[in-house]
Structure formats: structure tokens, C-alpha cells
Length: 359
Image 1: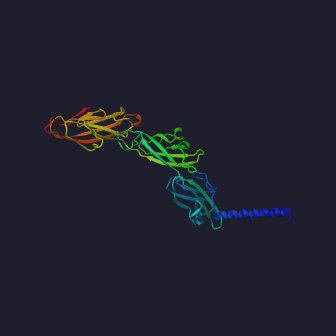
Image 2: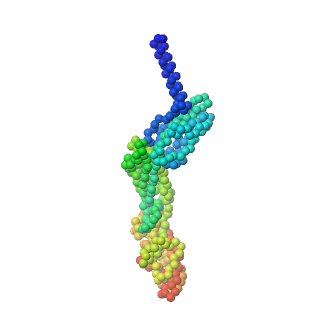
């Protein structure tokens, strides 16, 4: 056998061996996927599309994987799904596989192989490492001392947001915030360079859509730009509330008992104090707040509190109305009202109809 004949035989043997290897891999004989970098997603095979929804799932999240191709009709093809090398779904036309992620740091390799009746095959693969971001927020609005609730967003108020990512490296070590590149985005807030950067785990946003919720998306990526986790939240917006309380000489402002509809006056006088919840002010007597009281026919504009003092013996009722408006131009839509009925019974005392005296 001459040199050229031997060379041609070797070429044929090489081609046959290559075809055998391709077929064995495609048919699942020793079918494996290459190791993937620690981060979330790798691209699918050229011409095919393996879609993960949601794209960046958190821990214990329901996920849908779908496979598409223009090579042939997948509804007539036998499709095999593997997760971390194990067959989890197989059948004709099985273009969608639903699953649930595990704990933070768990890695899932998803491989799909489709074969039509002629033997033609296409494959796709993705890999994801489960990460998560918690986002906590608080509006920069006023609430009374010792209030156990959270300051809420009101029209025109600023909102402080803090991202708490939980993402791990390939060696199982958790990323420090200083190692992560934070990207913040909001459809209804001004976008600028202050919303991105390494270690940028907190921001302050103002909602430009006064009466719409604030939509915020935070994502973190590594130094190579691989997105590790993403979270979307909606911060609700609410109108401020004005609530009245009795200010007792002995007990101070009685925050445990809000005066919502009625107030019974037994003593010779009582002090009513207003608290403007969730307005963009430092305290209840902030100079930007405008108070307008009305008790019967009397009108007062004094801030904060009034004194109710019946001036003749007897019983009766008086309507107390209060309107509070934030006069700051950035918070012009912040206002609240309170309306209660005051009943008094001072028989035998030197009192009569309800009157008001500014503090």
C-alpha cells in the first residue's frame, strides 16, 4: 500500500471515528455538558434558544425552561431534558420543563436535546447559580415618636432603598458587597450615574409619578459583568394621614388612643394635638406645614395643637375639623384631613359651648 493510499485510509478512519463520537454524545451515551463558570447563564447553541423564566430566579422559585429551534418542528421531535446530567423529562413535543430552584448557591445545569424522525438533532444548555437580593425601603417621611410602623411613601417624598444580596462564588464563599457591582433602575425616577457602582448597596429615589407606585430593579454582577442576581420591587404610594390625639397634662400625648370619629370631653378643657403621618417634614410643627382648624364657626391656623374649653355649664357637641397641607413646592400634593365630633357634659361647672384657644 503506497503512501497516498495509507493517508486516505487514515482520513476515512478519522471521519468515521468523529461521526461515532458525535452520535454517541447526541444519543446520550456518556452525555455530559461542559463545566460552566460560576455565574448565572451561558448562551445556548447557535440557532437554538433555551429560555429560562424568570431569568434570574431566587431560591425556591418556580422556573419554566422552554426550548425553541428553527431547524425542524419540535412538536414532532423527541425531546430529552437533563438537570445536572440526570434525565428529568423525555417525550415528543416536550418543549417546556418546569422546575423549582434550591437554596442560595445551588448550581443547576440544564441541557435539552431534540431529535426529529430523520435523526437530525439540536441541543441547548444553560447553567445558573441561585442567588438572591432582599430590598428593604423606608420613605423619608415623618411619623410620631415611638411609632412602630414604617414611614410610607407619599406623593413627592424621597425613598431610601437598601439591597441585601446573597450570592456565592464557585468555591462557596459569599461575595462581599464591595466585590459586587450594583445597578439600580426605576421607570419613574431620574436615572444618573449615582445609581451604579461597586458597593453601591443603597440609594435615595424620588418618585416622579406622584400618585403611582415606585418601581425599582436592583441587580448585582461580578467584576467580569456577569449578572449574579436581580430583584424587582414595587413601593406603594399613599396619601398622608392626619390623626388627632389628646395631650394629657399627666400622661402627655396619648398615642395609644387615636381620636378617629368622636371625643368625649369631661374636664373643663382638653388639648388636642395633630400628627401628620407620612409627610416630608422633620416634625409636626415643621414650618412648611400649614394647619387650618375649624371648631364650629371658629377658624384657627395655629400649628400642632388647640385647646377645647367649654365656657358654660351644660352638654352638647362640637365638630372639629382640621386640614394640614405641606407648602413645600416639591411636596405640594401632600395633604391630610381629620374630622371628629366632640361631646361635652359639664353640668354644674362654669362651662357651655365648646370654644378654642391656641396653645
